[in-house]
Amino acid sequence: MSKVVEYYSSAFSPESLYGFYHIVAIFSLVVLFWMIGLSYLVFKANTNSVENRFMAILLFCEGIKASFLALEIFPYSSHWQGLWDILFPLKMEPFMFAQITSILLYLAFPVYYRVNQLKFLNNDALKKHVWYIIPFIGLITWIFLRTQEGFGFENASWIICNEAGSEPIVKNWWGSVTERVNQYAAEIGTCSRDFDRAVVDEPAGSWGIVLLGPIFSLIGLIFLRASMKQSQRENEGSTAYGSLPSRSLYIGFLGKVVGQVVFFVTVLVMLPALNGGVFFEFADSIRVQYGADPTTLDRALFFIWSFTLVITPAAIGFEALMFVHATLKDTVFGIDSNLRKTFTNTIFTGIGAISFVFVSEAMENVIGYGMLGGVLMGTTIIIGRRPIINLIDICSSRLIPEEYSLGELKYLEAYGKTIQDFVLTERERDLLANLAIAYEISEERLAVIEEKYRDSLSIGSSTTIQITESE
Image (cartoon, helix red, strand yellow):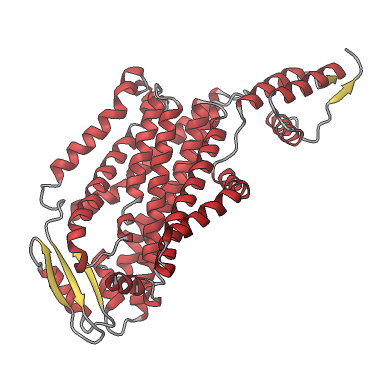
């Protein structure tokens, strides 16, 4: 227990940016579960849709890419080497598989989103099979590459410093102690404080696969933009929802691509420029963080490197929200409201479960009877269920863009036909009011969706609909 406390005390010290590394790991884990959940919801929205299956696979792979640091919420040092004999393969193997698979999925966009120049790819035969063939190809590709020189993780060691002012020592983990590891230990010199960090091979081939991602995501972005523009031309003058999913999809992917490009430029341009023209690796962060008398440049390198780690999970989290929003609207109108309810119930259940365990453990340590604390917390959550769910629902409404429910869409269909001549009779108004009641649409919500509908027709919210007594 003392080792755990010591480890996290050091991890959350000012020198370690108050645990920023572990905060990113927790955030990455949240994004991973969020993406897996959204992937499942996209699939369940329409299990027979090949487009939904394709999108579910893409979201799943992107979630794995975002989770690179997720497992590092666990203590990561030589003391827990046995644990990391299991965790390291779980960290790296799915990550590399997801990197390769997502690149292939980007190239497959024209199969599911029609691009005129590649319209021969947009056919039902390919759609039926591409969504599952690509993950299989990605898996086989990585199984082959991981055994090749320059791709596999063949050597790993620990660099350990027992106290400030001492010289670092090197302990082998697997493979052999390489000259590179000894060089890093020599560059550290006298340790500024105690630490215990792993130095694992960072093969050029594996880094190459990671850095190819932004390039191919740009190609995918071009495909999506071409598809979106094409959809807008085909639906010009129409109020159909067919073009909106492509736009939402494009915005989500654009946000992710921007994040990936920032990561690409930082890793390949900014960090090497500050590191004397040498590629900056994970092992370099040990040198600049723990070396004796760190310079201003060392602190800048450590700071930039640390914040670079959050770019990918943040960008993929944004992509998830917009991708799922687009896909769900394209499949089942109004399903986003069901998604919001699922989100609310899941978060509430998670808060309840975590609080129960946390308070039970705390009470166990304080009074020796943990169940009492769990019962008290459970009772509190049940009593406060409504305000808690209302708060979560507000958050979920912001996270998941609002869309019309099925009832609202049916109402808007009738409303649109009724106001075509910009004249609304008393009878028509009464019929619409009864229709709104039947679909359980509140007066406040009614005013909002009617205004949005008039805006979409370029009528403008300031336009007055004439109400007459005529029949």
